[in-house]
Length: 583
Image 1 (cartoon, rainbow, N blue to C red):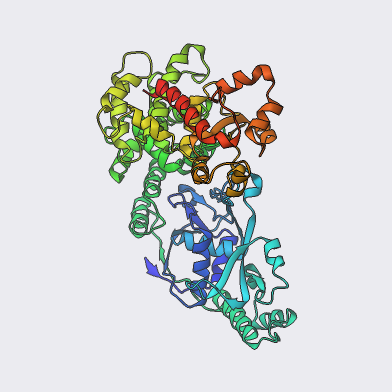
Image 2 (image 1 turned 30 degrees about the vertical axis):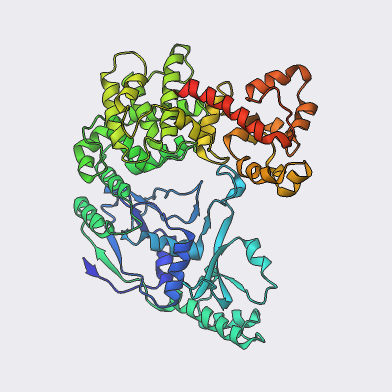
């Protein structure tokens, strides 16, 4: 390994763009956020060191012996997170990046690519939730954030244009610096955009300094210092990779384990198989949120290894080859388990621990991976037991710490089980009296009444209260008494006493005021007073049926002035239902 002549960022970006620089399959995927990218560019502009890189030269004669991937160019949080496999049909040597992928990908995205991440207030499956943004630099002022000097921000094109008439902002598309190869071209840009002649001399001076500095950072200063490894022994390269990366904060442990899998599978591409499988199962039903950590842990459990902890020793060559040989059965078991859970109405919105899926997958594999388990009429009782175990485990949060303490004993119980159905009773008995107990008390049920709108437990509770509802369909969690009515002014208008107003406002978001409604009735109900909505929407002959279905007290006036009594009576009815199922 030898230290090489440093390169400019422009030279490196050119090499990435021409696919001269690639990523070995043992590399992790891109994980940096936009904040990390903007911090990197700010550091470069301030002449802060960004550490040396480690490259690996693979001769053209041996490129087919290894698997390589291209750099990610346009990151999309939902649609484009994985690197494409590189086409090595050419006759050139390959330079693979062993250390520095996150920094180099960030430079490429900032200069030639884009970054699309989910807006926090939109659903994950909404196409409009991921606006495509590019990196911009404000040439008129320093950053308002004290940690930064330069104001680098990811913006959509329209966001950048909205500030065109703002005297404190001139958003320069950072990628355009690649086209300003000569300093004279930088000067021309400043003149054409009237930046150098700005009446505010301080802003003119800053614009001049910032753009010339960016030009120097990208085109002139040889910033990319790197070492070059030329050994083509994969074991040596893997060990170098792990030694170099194991101390890094962005490399999580499962990435290292996936590197072992990638290096040791001989019939499949582990990285490609696992990433493809994760993407597939996350699209089941209303969507899930599993990752490669979950898949690797499931592989250890479903392969019947005695030690299922996340450590390098468990991903040795013999174990990895066993996982490879069982890959089809493992993936079918996990896929069928998630389809079953989805049929119960669960999804990424209310599965608080993906480890809950693993015992179900193991059970399905143990009984021979039967087809159509989630719909077979012969499996009704079996499905009911699995659903109850899932519900109890979610509400009791049995996987909230040290999941191996649940996974191993549940696996052992399944192995020894001879009942012909999911061993719910034996699992419940095993954990009884421990801090993972599945047994509910009256106090536990009472505590569920404090589950609030928007919390994951609410949909789990609704699945118990509305067993007839197919939660895979478009059902909404709805406030019985609309939340818009719980303001001091409106409550006073309805005659609610001052002594009760704070209590009403403090309780309208709890289970006692929540119901499950199909989307269209919920939209129609909107902000109507509850008593008015019932009178105008529910036929007289169907009112009692509606009230029974939704645990609505029968013999009280449903005006908001009676909300306190309504809540007390409805909570009693809900608790009775929960006790009958959970206790």
